[in-house]
Image 1: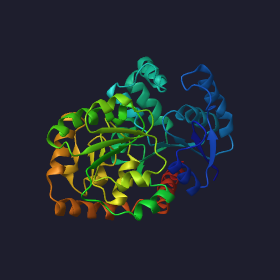
Image 2: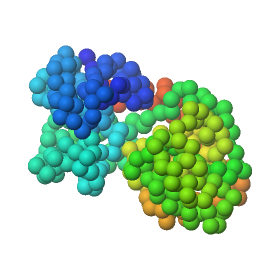
Image 3: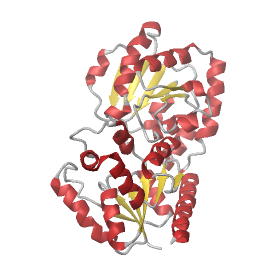
Length: 349
Protein backbone atom coordinates (compact mmCIF):
# COMPACT_ATOMS: atom_id res chain seq x y z
CA UNK A 1 0.00 0.00 0.00
CA UNK A 2 1.47 3.33 -1.09
CA UNK A 3 0.62 6.26 1.17
CA UNK A 4 1.28 10.00 0.83
CA UNK A 5 0.67 12.94 3.13
CA UNK A 6 -0.42 16.11 1.34
CA UNK A 7 0.81 19.29 2.97
CA UNK A 8 1.29 23.01 2.46
CA UNK A 9 4.60 24.80 3.05
CA UNK A 10 8.03 23.24 3.33
CA UNK A 11 7.00 20.21 5.37
CA UNK A 12 4.20 18.90 7.60
CA UNK A 13 3.91 19.91 11.25
CA UNK A 14 6.66 18.11 13.24
CA UNK A 15 4.16 15.81 14.97
CA UNK A 16 2.51 15.04 11.64
CA UNK A 17 5.90 14.20 10.18
CA UNK A 18 6.09 11.56 12.89
CA UNK A 19 2.62 10.32 11.97
CA UNK A 20 3.68 10.09 8.31
CA UNK A 21 6.77 8.09 9.29
CA UNK A 22 4.61 5.75 11.38
CA UNK A 23 2.66 4.66 8.29
CA UNK A 24 5.63 4.93 5.89
CA UNK A 25 4.02 7.80 3.97
CA UNK A 26 5.75 9.99 1.42
CA UNK A 27 5.21 13.75 1.53
CA UNK A 28 3.62 15.67 -1.31
CA UNK A 29 4.06 19.43 -1.21
CA UNK A 30 0.92 20.93 -2.69
CA UNK A 31 2.25 24.43 -3.31
CA UNK A 32 5.41 26.52 -3.36
CA UNK A 33 6.00 27.85 0.18
CA UNK A 34 7.29 31.10 -1.33
CA UNK A 35 3.93 31.78 -2.99
CA UNK A 36 1.23 33.65 -1.14
CA UNK A 37 -1.50 31.22 -0.04
CA UNK A 38 -4.02 33.85 -1.17
CA UNK A 39 -2.75 33.88 -4.74
CA UNK A 40 -4.09 32.35 -7.95
CA UNK A 41 -0.59 30.95 -8.46
CA UNK A 42 -0.75 28.98 -5.21
CA UNK A 43 -4.18 27.58 -5.97
CA UNK A 44 -3.04 26.62 -9.49
CA UNK A 45 -0.05 24.77 -8.01
CA UNK A 46 -2.36 22.86 -5.70
CA UNK A 47 -4.41 21.70 -8.66
CA UNK A 48 -1.29 20.72 -10.61
CA UNK A 49 -0.12 18.67 -7.62
CA UNK A 50 -2.96 16.25 -8.29
CA UNK A 51 -0.81 14.38 -10.85
CA UNK A 52 1.69 13.60 -8.06
CA UNK A 53 -0.98 11.50 -6.31
CA UNK A 54 -1.37 9.02 -9.17
CA UNK A 55 0.78 6.22 -7.73
CA UNK A 56 -0.74 6.28 -4.24
CA UNK A 57 -3.45 4.09 -2.75
CA UNK A 58 -4.13 6.36 0.21
CA UNK A 59 -3.79 10.12 0.59
CA UNK A 60 -3.66 11.87 3.97
CA UNK A 61 -4.60 15.54 3.77
CA UNK A 62 -2.82 17.47 6.53
CA UNK A 63 -5.37 20.14 7.32
CA UNK A 64 -8.20 21.68 5.31
CA UNK A 65 -6.26 23.35 2.52
CA UNK A 66 -4.67 20.17 1.01
CA UNK A 67 -8.18 18.72 0.69
CA UNK A 68 -8.46 20.50 -2.67
CA UNK A 69 -5.62 18.39 -4.03
CA UNK A 70 -6.84 15.33 -2.15
CA UNK A 71 -10.41 15.47 -3.39
CA UNK A 72 -9.27 15.87 -6.99
CA UNK A 73 -6.71 13.08 -6.56
CA UNK A 74 -9.38 10.77 -5.22
CA UNK A 75 -11.83 11.50 -8.04
CA UNK A 76 -9.11 11.21 -10.70
CA UNK A 77 -7.21 8.14 -9.51
CA UNK A 78 -9.77 6.42 -7.24
CA UNK A 79 -7.53 6.42 -4.15
CA UNK A 80 -8.71 6.65 -0.56
CA UNK A 81 -8.65 10.05 1.14
CA UNK A 82 -8.06 10.43 4.88
CA UNK A 83 -8.43 13.88 6.41
CA UNK A 84 -6.01 14.57 9.27
CA UNK A 85 -8.00 17.30 10.97
CA UNK A 86 -5.55 19.20 13.13
CA UNK A 87 -6.79 22.72 12.49
CA UNK A 88 -9.94 24.66 13.29
CA UNK A 89 -10.92 25.86 9.82
CA UNK A 90 -14.15 23.91 9.52
CA UNK A 91 -15.14 25.08 12.98
CA UNK A 92 -14.69 28.62 11.65
CA UNK A 93 -16.82 27.67 8.67
CA UNK A 94 -19.62 26.46 10.92
CA UNK A 95 -19.33 29.59 13.06
CA UNK A 96 -19.18 31.81 9.93
CA UNK A 97 -15.89 33.19 11.22
CA UNK A 98 -13.79 32.91 8.07
CA UNK A 99 -12.56 36.32 6.97
CA UNK A 100 -12.47 37.45 3.36
CA UNK A 101 -8.67 37.57 3.20
CA UNK A 102 -8.15 34.31 5.02
CA UNK A 103 -6.04 31.61 3.38
CA UNK A 104 -9.26 29.63 3.55
CA UNK A 105 -11.34 32.21 1.70
CA UNK A 106 -12.00 29.48 -0.90
CA UNK A 107 -14.06 27.71 1.75
CA UNK A 108 -16.13 30.85 2.17
CA UNK A 109 -16.54 30.95 -1.61
CA UNK A 110 -17.76 27.35 -1.64
CA UNK A 111 -20.15 28.09 1.18
CA UNK A 112 -21.57 31.07 -0.68
CA UNK A 113 -21.91 29.13 -3.93
CA UNK A 114 -23.26 25.82 -2.70
CA UNK A 115 -24.50 26.52 0.81
CA UNK A 116 -23.48 24.54 3.87
CA UNK A 117 -25.45 21.53 2.72
CA UNK A 118 -23.49 21.49 -0.54
CA UNK A 119 -20.14 21.69 1.25
CA UNK A 120 -21.20 18.86 3.56
CA UNK A 121 -22.24 16.75 0.58
CA UNK A 122 -18.88 17.28 -1.16
CA UNK A 123 -16.89 16.39 1.93
CA UNK A 124 -19.02 13.46 3.11
CA UNK A 125 -18.71 11.83 -0.32
CA UNK A 126 -15.09 12.74 -0.91
CA UNK A 127 -13.52 11.96 2.46
CA UNK A 128 -13.21 8.27 3.33
CA UNK A 129 -12.22 8.82 6.95
CA UNK A 130 -11.18 11.47 9.44
CA UNK A 131 -8.38 11.34 11.97
CA UNK A 132 -9.18 14.09 14.46
CA UNK A 133 -6.62 15.34 16.99
CA UNK A 134 -9.24 15.81 19.71
CA UNK A 135 -12.80 15.05 20.72
CA UNK A 136 -13.57 18.73 20.11
CA UNK A 137 -12.49 18.38 16.49
CA UNK A 138 -14.32 15.08 16.06
CA UNK A 139 -17.57 16.62 17.31
CA UNK A 140 -17.72 19.41 14.76
CA UNK A 141 -16.39 17.25 11.94
CA UNK A 142 -19.18 14.76 12.60
CA UNK A 143 -21.70 17.49 11.82
CA UNK A 144 -19.95 18.05 8.48
CA UNK A 145 -19.09 14.58 7.15
CA UNK A 146 -22.17 12.82 8.53
CA UNK A 147 -22.68 9.58 10.40
CA UNK A 148 -21.40 7.24 7.68
CA UNK A 149 -17.84 8.61 7.52
CA UNK A 150 -15.65 6.98 10.19
CA UNK A 151 -13.85 9.32 12.58
CA UNK A 152 -10.95 8.23 14.79
CA UNK A 153 -9.02 10.28 17.35
CA UNK A 154 -5.26 10.56 17.79
CA UNK A 155 -3.74 13.25 19.98
CA UNK A 156 -0.49 15.01 19.03
CA UNK A 157 2.67 14.71 21.08
CA UNK A 158 5.52 16.71 22.59
CA UNK A 159 8.65 16.75 20.43
CA UNK A 160 11.15 14.16 21.75
CA UNK A 161 13.97 16.49 22.81
CA UNK A 162 11.63 18.88 24.58
CA UNK A 163 9.78 15.93 26.15
CA UNK A 164 13.03 14.82 27.78
CA UNK A 165 13.96 18.34 28.89
CA UNK A 166 10.58 19.01 30.45
CA UNK A 167 10.58 15.65 32.19
CA UNK A 168 13.68 16.67 34.13
CA UNK A 169 11.98 19.77 35.59
CA UNK A 170 10.02 20.07 38.80
CA UNK A 171 6.97 22.24 39.32
CA UNK A 172 7.70 25.46 41.20
CA UNK A 173 4.61 25.91 43.35
CA UNK A 174 5.85 29.26 44.66
CA UNK A 175 6.32 30.82 41.22
CA UNK A 176 4.52 34.11 40.58
CA UNK A 177 4.88 33.75 36.81
CA UNK A 178 1.95 32.87 34.54
CA UNK A 179 2.72 31.75 30.99
CA UNK A 180 1.03 31.45 27.63
CA UNK A 181 2.85 30.18 24.53
CA UNK A 182 1.79 30.58 20.92
CA UNK A 183 2.12 32.81 17.90
CA UNK A 184 0.04 35.94 17.51
CA UNK A 185 -3.25 34.93 15.89
CA UNK A 186 -6.82 35.86 16.70
CA UNK A 187 -7.89 32.28 17.36
CA UNK A 188 -5.24 31.94 20.10
CA UNK A 189 -7.12 34.54 22.17
CA UNK A 190 -4.08 36.16 23.78
CA UNK A 191 -5.89 39.50 23.60
CA UNK A 192 -8.56 38.00 25.85
CA UNK A 193 -5.91 36.97 28.36
CA UNK A 194 -4.32 40.42 28.39
CA UNK A 195 -7.74 41.96 28.96
CA UNK A 196 -8.30 39.50 31.80
CA UNK A 197 -4.90 40.31 33.29
CA UNK A 198 -5.89 43.94 33.84
CA UNK A 199 -8.51 42.63 36.27
CA UNK A 200 -6.21 40.01 37.84
CA UNK A 201 -3.51 42.61 38.49
CA UNK A 202 -5.83 44.68 40.68
CA UNK A 203 -5.92 41.92 43.29
CA UNK A 204 -2.60 40.16 42.61
CA UNK A 205 -0.03 42.80 41.55
CA UNK A 206 2.85 40.55 42.62
CA UNK A 207 2.15 38.13 39.73
CA UNK A 208 3.37 38.51 36.14
CA UNK A 209 2.12 37.23 32.81
CA UNK A 210 4.71 36.28 30.18
CA UNK A 211 3.57 35.99 26.56
CA UNK A 212 5.86 33.77 24.49
CA UNK A 213 5.66 33.45 20.71
CA UNK A 214 6.13 35.38 17.50
CA UNK A 215 4.29 38.51 16.51
CA UNK A 216 2.59 39.68 19.68
CA UNK A 217 2.18 43.47 19.82
CA UNK A 218 4.30 45.39 22.29
CA UNK A 219 1.19 47.31 23.38
CA UNK A 220 0.25 44.32 25.52
CA UNK A 221 2.92 45.55 27.93
CA UNK A 222 0.79 48.66 28.54
CA UNK A 223 -1.17 46.37 30.84
CA UNK A 224 0.65 46.26 34.20
CA UNK A 225 2.35 42.95 34.93
CA UNK A 226 2.46 41.78 31.29
CA UNK A 227 5.77 40.83 29.63
CA UNK A 228 5.95 40.20 25.87
CA UNK A 229 8.94 37.91 25.30
CA UNK A 230 8.43 37.03 21.65
CA UNK A 231 10.09 33.98 20.15
CA UNK A 232 12.14 31.97 22.66
CA UNK A 233 14.65 29.26 21.75
CA UNK A 234 14.65 27.58 25.14
CA UNK A 235 11.07 26.60 25.99
CA UNK A 236 12.24 24.48 28.90
CA UNK A 237 13.48 27.68 30.58
CA UNK A 238 10.07 29.26 30.01
CA UNK A 239 8.23 26.43 31.71
CA UNK A 240 10.82 26.09 34.48
CA UNK A 241 9.86 29.44 35.98
CA UNK A 242 6.08 29.11 35.54
CA UNK A 243 3.52 28.47 38.24
CA UNK A 244 0.46 28.48 35.98
CA UNK A 245 -0.14 28.01 32.27
CA UNK A 246 -3.09 29.59 30.41
CA UNK A 247 -4.42 28.63 26.97
CA UNK A 248 -6.99 31.36 26.18
CA UNK A 249 -7.90 30.17 22.66
CA UNK A 250 -11.16 31.20 21.07
CA UNK A 251 -10.89 27.81 19.37
CA UNK A 252 -7.95 25.46 19.07
CA UNK A 253 -7.88 21.97 17.58
CA UNK A 254 -5.73 20.74 20.46
CA UNK A 255 -2.98 22.96 21.87
CA UNK A 256 0.29 21.03 22.21
CA UNK A 257 1.66 23.67 24.57
CA UNK A 258 -0.89 22.44 27.11
CA UNK A 259 0.79 19.03 26.95
CA UNK A 260 4.17 20.68 27.47
CA UNK A 261 2.92 22.38 30.62
CA UNK A 262 1.43 19.11 31.87
CA UNK A 263 4.75 17.33 31.37
CA UNK A 264 6.35 19.67 33.92
CA UNK A 265 3.36 19.49 36.24
CA UNK A 266 2.19 23.07 35.61
CA UNK A 267 -1.58 23.33 36.06
CA UNK A 268 -3.21 24.71 32.88
CA UNK A 269 -6.29 26.89 32.67
CA UNK A 270 -7.80 26.40 29.22
CA UNK A 271 -10.92 27.38 27.33
CA UNK A 272 -13.72 24.92 26.64
CA UNK A 273 -13.08 25.33 22.90
CA UNK A 274 -9.51 24.04 23.19
CA UNK A 275 -9.12 20.42 22.12
CA UNK A 276 -6.96 19.55 25.12
CA UNK A 277 -10.11 19.96 27.23
CA UNK A 278 -10.63 16.19 27.06
CA UNK A 279 -7.35 15.69 28.91
CA UNK A 280 -7.51 18.59 31.33
CA UNK A 281 -11.02 17.76 32.51
CA UNK A 282 -9.64 14.46 33.83
CA UNK A 283 -7.31 16.47 36.05
CA UNK A 284 -9.73 19.10 37.33
CA UNK A 285 -12.84 20.41 35.57
CA UNK A 286 -12.41 23.71 37.40
CA UNK A 287 -9.48 24.45 35.07
CA UNK A 288 -11.78 24.78 32.03
CA UNK A 289 -13.55 28.06 31.26
CA UNK A 290 -15.54 29.78 28.49
CA UNK A 291 -13.41 31.76 26.04
CA UNK A 292 -13.88 35.27 27.39
CA UNK A 293 -11.81 37.62 29.51
CA UNK A 294 -14.21 37.69 32.46
CA UNK A 295 -14.12 33.92 33.00
CA UNK A 296 -10.36 33.78 32.43
CA UNK A 297 -9.77 36.47 35.06
CA UNK A 298 -12.04 34.76 37.55
CA UNK A 299 -10.40 31.38 37.13
CA UNK A 300 -6.85 32.75 37.36
CA UNK A 301 -7.76 34.50 40.64
CA UNK A 302 -9.35 31.27 41.85
CA UNK A 303 -6.12 29.39 41.21
CA UNK A 304 -4.05 32.03 42.99
CA UNK A 305 -6.31 31.63 46.04
CA UNK A 306 -5.47 27.91 46.41
CA UNK A 307 -2.94 26.89 49.01
CA UNK A 308 0.29 25.09 48.12
CA UNK A 309 -1.03 21.63 48.96
CA UNK A 310 -4.00 22.09 46.64
CA UNK A 311 -1.77 23.30 43.80
CA UNK A 312 0.67 20.42 44.31
CA UNK A 313 -2.17 17.88 44.23
CA UNK A 314 -3.28 19.24 40.86
CA UNK A 315 0.34 19.32 39.68
CA UNK A 316 0.85 15.64 40.48
CA UNK A 317 -2.12 14.70 38.30
CA UNK A 318 -0.71 16.89 35.53
CA UNK A 319 2.63 15.05 35.56
CA UNK A 320 0.95 11.66 35.42
CA UNK A 321 -1.06 12.72 32.40
CA UNK A 322 1.68 14.62 30.60
CA UNK A 323 4.10 11.71 30.52
CA UNK A 324 1.68 9.79 28.25
CA UNK A 325 2.33 12.10 25.30
CA UNK A 326 5.66 10.86 24.04
CA UNK A 327 6.29 10.58 20.32
CA UNK A 328 6.56 6.79 20.40
CA UNK A 329 3.23 6.25 22.14
CA UNK A 330 1.25 8.66 19.98
CA UNK A 331 2.77 7.45 16.71
CA UNK A 332 1.77 3.90 17.62
CA UNK A 333 -1.78 5.08 18.24
CA UNK A 334 -1.82 6.94 14.92
CA UNK A 335 -0.60 3.85 13.06
CA UNK A 336 -3.31 1.72 14.64
CA UNK A 337 -6.04 4.27 13.91
CA UNK A 338 -4.87 4.72 10.33
CA UNK A 339 -4.84 0.97 9.70
CA UNK A 340 -8.35 0.67 11.13
CA UNK A 341 -9.65 3.36 8.76
CA UNK A 342 -7.97 1.81 5.72
CA UNK A 343 -9.23 -1.65 6.65
CA UNK A 344 -12.77 -0.29 6.99
CA UNK A 345 -12.54 1.14 3.46
CA UNK A 346 -11.15 -2.07 2.01
CA UNK A 347 -13.95 -4.11 3.57
CA UNK A 348 -16.62 -1.87 2.05
CA UNK A 349 -15.16 -1.97 -1.49
